[in-house]
Length: 220
Image (cartoon, rainbow, N blue to C red):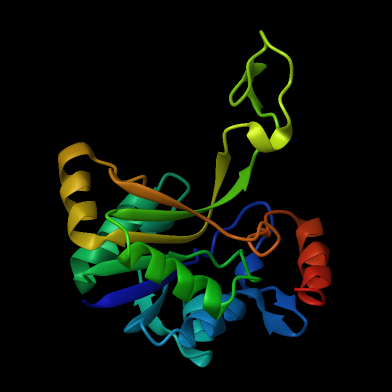
């Protein structure tokens, strides 16, 4: 079974320009997930998947293989379904692992545990998540509680998962079959939602998140 991991990191981030190359403790943010993945022995090949020459160079400097995607697969309208399909068709893995560069707190053990969980289950898709039994509403409607009865102890509520996409794993053949049939495939058909520590899955989406991640690095 050939396991390929890739780190999608386009150059045109809008909310925080060039965020994948921003330094955190004097190290480019993308380098943290590269270093974590390099130490996972069951990954056969590790790529930085980008449209940006500078990001590609930094990826190579830290030990990742280069994968230059087309500009069409890096514009604001490109979907993860499309660029994952592209790399599967080009590199032909058995298993594709997508690692999020804006989650720099993810460790080698997190990645290895996710791959082992995928391999030990009858699933074609694994997506990392944060779980809670707290009372959850969507658009004012309850998800895991009833409004027509007394509140139960929190631990008795059904578990709710929020997808964080820090680590995602697919059976590559099943992904291609689903994409060819439907035009999308990221959520898979037989999925396993894999909980990880919500602090380790923190994403850098806004400027203030850099300070949060820097502080968390001292404690995790």
